[in-house]
Length: 74
Image (cartoon, rainbow, N blue to C red):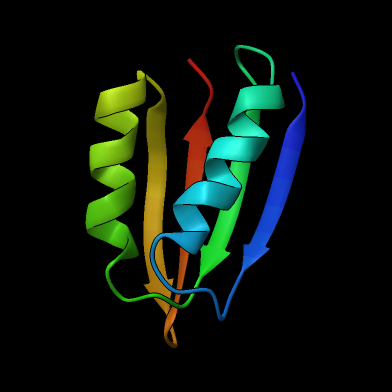
C-alpha cells in the first residue's frame, strides 16, 4: 500500500477532482491518497466522486480554509 499526497490548493473546480482522478488512475487498489484543497465546493464534489468511482472517503476535515480529504483506492 502506497501513500500519495496532492496539493491542489488554489485550484478551482474541476481542478482538484481532475488531479485526484489522475493520481487515483495510476494508484493500486488499497493505496491511500491525501488531497488538500481550498475550493469550498470540494467537500460535495469528493463525496459524489467517491460514490461514482467506488473509492472510499476515509476522512474529510476543514481547518482554516483548507479542506483535507483522505481517499482509499477501491
